[in-house]
Length: 314
Image (cartoon, rainbow, N blue to C red; front, side):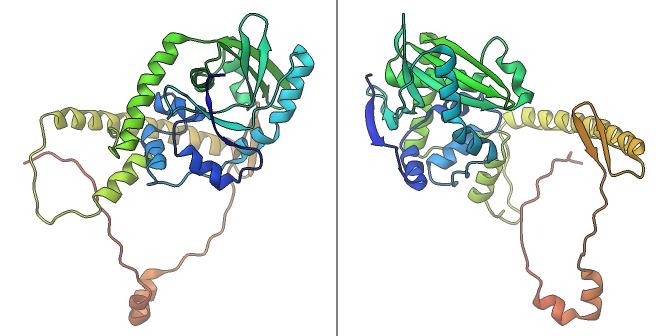
């Protein structure tokens, strides 16, 4: 293996592991950098790496994925008779030190030599993604690991829905690795030089802009570049499509409510629909202001925000 050991990960505290993650791009980051991750944007990852956004705590899916990793590994060994050696180390590439890898294990292939072993768990709803291949984000992850280690292949095993086990062998893809390295190099340059990535549609990007430009200068004016008109047209088109989609969603919701009627729960196929009564207590601020103005003023907090709108000139 050509990779360098950064640190041993056995018994490494979670917070320290997060600090090591900031030193480079890990396998689970690869799909984010390449724009192939459905859950995280590159802006959000950039903010994490530059200490502008805390890493999110592992959710339930990630937690159980970690807990079941050993079970998946043992089942793979049982079914394939291929021994897997666990790797409890954080690795980095010799050629590209910003590329990091946390391997689940390594094993031997008769033709490809030492290979990576990766254990996964997946929801039953993602069964179709594992039919003839593997999800794009995992393909990028194991190719990233092969770039770091120099290995020529990887086994990936998955437990789907808690009751379906599958495994596949994936060979090294030099063309994909070359493309990925270029994207990761560019991303890491933005991290090191603290240069923001191009804005995207993520909530992280919106939060970054709010932090960067919290207040507007009263009555100030700027002539926008010509490229702004194209963005305005895209904005208008999106608003029109949103109105149509919102109407379709509301119609489907209303028809389902009609079907449920006075019942709280309705089921069809593998879906559960609920229309549940919820009681809430809310402060009557209008009455409080009218009858106890001093008390209302005492407990009123003034907040400010910037409202965005687009309209035509007269």
